[in-house]
Image 1 (spheres, rainbow, N blue to C red):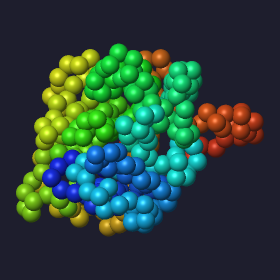
Image 2 (cartoon, one colour; image 1 turned 45 degrees about the horizontal axis):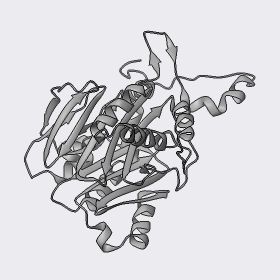
Image 3 (spheres, rainbow, N blue to C red; image 1 turned 60 degrees about the vertical axis):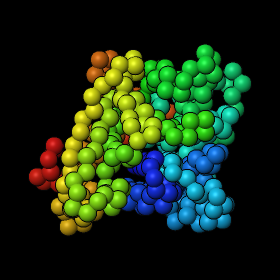
Length: 315
């Protein structure tokens, strides 16, 4: 499962982001990356574990490039394209001024990609994520839209589930985030779950967490934020105050992570289906299986095995 951590604040961003990514390693992933903004937009990404990304940063990044107060980080579980350095997140726009991280699947990415290629765009990766940031860039350039407007317009055409964060070299004090069918939260930063930044809270101080609802776009700028829907209408965020120890959050009351993940399987399966089951049209969209269609058609048999334990909730 992919993981997202983004930060904007008074601290140096890359240590906060790397520490957050390490706290998401339990999810499983195949690559990791980070984008930092300090005069220019720098992206560093590597196949393998977060420690490989750290080694890459030590070799490829200058001390000046690492001095940044805003950045985004990602751990990827491959859906479109094999696990490698190029397909890892973050991804650049065509002009290199935008960078994006993304959880989820853009089901109609192939149609969008063909449209963009006809309009002169070239792609370095095999991912749906790179297509999305190019699409946002393309819309922005057509009518000189603001980045926020371009994001809203683009997401109206996107089919599928997503959680995204975007940073722009032209607007170095801003993070833009959006979500559909992928629940996540932030506390003056953004993440796909709340414990990556728990170590940064003040001692014995409850933290307030804001949650994005479906089809909402959040713009964080200069320590303030505004949330609107895709029609540019302001909305009120869901706020939760957490006063809990980090250890209790990490294992959720279970004796081990393995036991916790076993009992969370019903929820995990439900999360995987978000954005793929359409109750109105009674259709199922499984974009990640498209490249294996012929293999599935030719299969002699398909065995589906539910995994459950007696007494598990939801089964």
